[in-house]
Image (cartoon, rainbow, N blue to C red; front, side):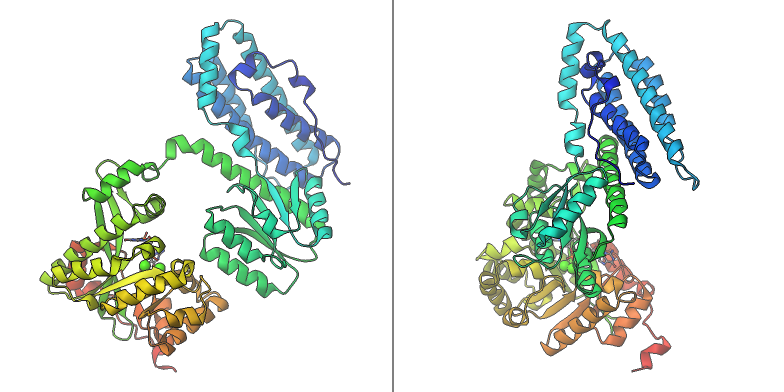
Length: 565
Ligand code: C2E
Ligand code: CA
Ligand code: CA
């Protein structure tokens, strides 16, 4: 029997809004949620959906109680000790084991009823204690509430259905409604992307749409730093879905599922409800864990980043590149880290984007270049003459004086420009091909080598690749890591190696983590290798030691397969 869409206010909550509301005005919403689940149980919503609702409730209640406790603690509430006992009891009730296979709707409904009783009792107790509270405390509670994060508003998980077929949109919106949720439908993808999309939203996305296809939608949102969860839908063959999933994986975009049309509606109802719960659970867990688990790296402020760049807190770690034919070292990629006196070692994913967005990237790139040239001299003194690769950003391509500055810096230290490779991602180049060509050509003319990084995900055309004066092509590590389990990834790796050969570029595979992948790449004729299998990025001293200690090199791959053509 299809479940009715229920939207009602819990009758038992109506008279409980004085004392409790002062503690936390979310209580009404929580009780409403329980009430709706209870009604749904009575109307025979089906065990699976009810189970999903119960799980949802568990998470919501746990999160609610933790927040309530924080607010009470913040204001030193006189009933805190008593409330904590009850909160703990309820939290224990929430540990209900729902894993039993023979679970019936009745037993879940009973649990929901029990939870309701526990909470109503708890709220009543709080209300009683409220009469003893003085007005000053009331004020403090209000302040604590406004400063503590709003629970429900940020917990909303919006569901969007984007499909050019009106009928399909209507059907999916209706199915979502039957699952007890609500969805907004769009038949125009270009209209849809104007919406403010949160990372917690779920998007059911048709891949084949006339104005802007599904991959373009994902790419546009990705460029705006929107990372929602996608369910990809296609009316065509599996391959379209598969390659869209490849694209998403390469960008760390979360694809929860791939569906082929026509969609099995029964399965869909169950699925969307489950996914909604999952996304919300993850969201709540993040919210509740944040105060304790916030990584010190995430708290690096803009001021701290500015100071770090100007006062010598940047460090370069080096990751070796080996020639695949003889496992000899050809060079090192310099990867920047920030050594903060209090926050410790911070990785580039925590500060490069911040530098790009706040006009600090050119200072950072300069500092990296200077450090790399100083380190080159140290390598040289240790008897090593490597090629050092440094990474630059898309924004650096706006700096017209960069080629001259780099050339002058290298010349001042007597470093041949051939010893320096500049790596730039494929997507960075695509942002402004014609503008970047000028700078790239001038860098090349000054003698620096140029590497196109993360190749394979940016869809640059052959013409663009041919026009730009690259000397090296780095295959995106996403494909390298999957090449033994995924035929399409393997095809992309093969094509990249061939393309590099045809265009007289050096092919580099990065992200090699196993001997098997090394062996396979060697067989395919890839030129250079980089990855944890060889070495992680390490500080320069460790790097020199690593070079001089031959035992640390992975033994050259001499597997029997090597001689097989
Ligand atoms: P990238 O240029 O693609 O660098 C490769 C990243 O993959 C590095 O991460 C490296 O540590 C990691 N890696 C290498 N081999 C393996 C492997 O076998 N397995 C796995 N799982 N990972 C591997 P890292 O150092 O965190 O750098 C991340 C990104 O930050 C770099 O990606 C690059 O885009 C950026 N970056 C690093 N240094 C600089 C810099 O000086 N300037 C700019 N603009 N960007 C930089
Ligand atoms: Ca790189
Ligand atoms: Ca790369």
